[in-house]
Length: 331
Image 1: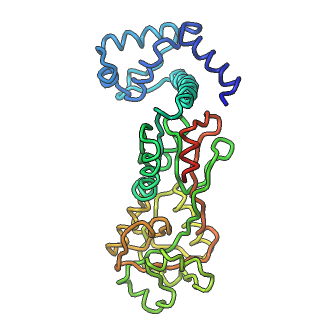
Image 2: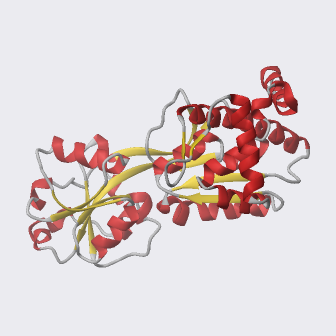
Image 3: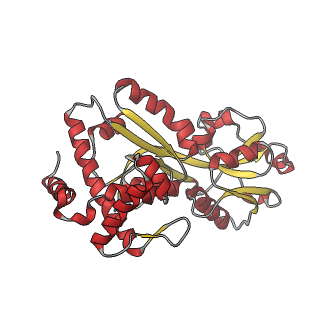
């Protein structure tokens, strides 16, 4: 149910937009300039002339008494006051979106939209069958799939431009709620031509073994990492959950990997491993969704850090639309 508190916020936002606080009149012009960091590009998007847009922004700045944009830099940047102004705009827009979503619920899902974000792995392999099933049941709902790295997606979820984010990293529970999707296990993906494979064939697993969950069998032994001390590793960049876990796993095994490349995406590391460039840490989610490749051998890891949850995340203080709820129920 649409809360009294949120309804009050909408009323306050409407009052602002109707002139209760004139500094927010024209806020959509300013927000478009902020998104593009260019008056010319923003004017083109808004279908108005650049002089008209500049005049509208200048009028707001005169009302405030301070500039929103620093025009001395190229591209233009926000001033300190401008950053706070944008933050306030996003709060107002979030309230507006909440009210619009409430109205859409009353229309019994005859219209509406759902924006879901995921990294390349989830956008390419996990989300397509889920979104296909959802679209079959609700053909009038527009689905927007956003593919980016986790940092960018988290920012979009926080600002309200995403409804849901699927990811395998842990997010702040004070800010985000979650719906469990699956448990994921990290494994080592090793090029099959590496000579280090020879003495440890009894540890080796195939992609078929992973798909049949053989790696979850307690009788399957984990690999001692020191067998690969002379081999090159392909790790993700710092800040990525897979990299953080890989570092912990190596540290706990008293093992320092020889890092050949640092990459943005797990799927990129996997593909480079396929072509023999080095060893990567890959989740069974990925291995189960890509075609089987005879150029790779997989090994089980003996560490709790190799196990993590994949969740759908949503922002807690946003209104949970019927569309979002139905999608989460479907998964």
